[in-house]
Length: 328
Image (cartoon, rainbow, N blue to C red; front, side, top):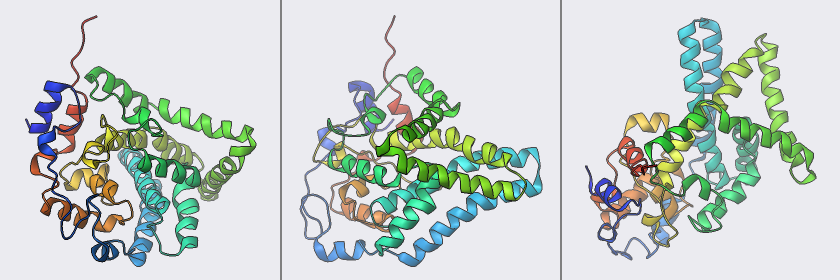
């Protein structure tokens, strides 16, 4: 047991106790908000353009290369492995699309937004500009009444049964089917028709690529269905590990969890340094490559204490499902 888990079980709240939130800011390196002072912030905000070219190319190579390898090997085990890994591939698209939404992927606006839209978001069924507006609202109104993702984060901890139902809906495609129907519904209305057509047009190009190689069925089984199922599970597990059960507060330690990072969740759930999410919410202008450095600054300032950190994601997920069952 950790201090945080004991607190959740005893008080049925995910919000850390006051004794884990020392008021140690500002310092000579950090402002009262936790953001670095200007000279340090200027260094942390540098966008590594060349590295991000490699990151985008690697995501494309991992997804389409993996499918091509599966088609070449054509073995049942490889089909299953590819199906599972494609859920992760959509997480990669989503995280780099998130970086582009923050205008942190490339220094040039045309490259950042162009690749963010057409190369990352639309392949992952995400309406880039709608997502950008919604996500900025999320940062402005974390866990407040205007929080656009409040339904995803609110009311934790929940019971194990409730958690199981949510994950089953994701794993069996219920959540994905709802999103897909919403995309087609967008064709009915002038306000949403344009972006719906752009997303569906991008999907048509991807389908045409599979068809050109004589394997159109792979679009369904290794593109669409993993997005509707595996990615949904990954996305929920990541999202609730970021903000599940937290509250509206100017203190980001009360809006965002922090979990000790290790290689396995960084591969599956929180690629591209997404797991340093508390640092991201302290200063959303810092590219993902520099979030560990900002986190280290917050630790060195005594603002993040060891007991504020969950030791691993499994411990946090168990705490999120730690509400006691009530008798009927």
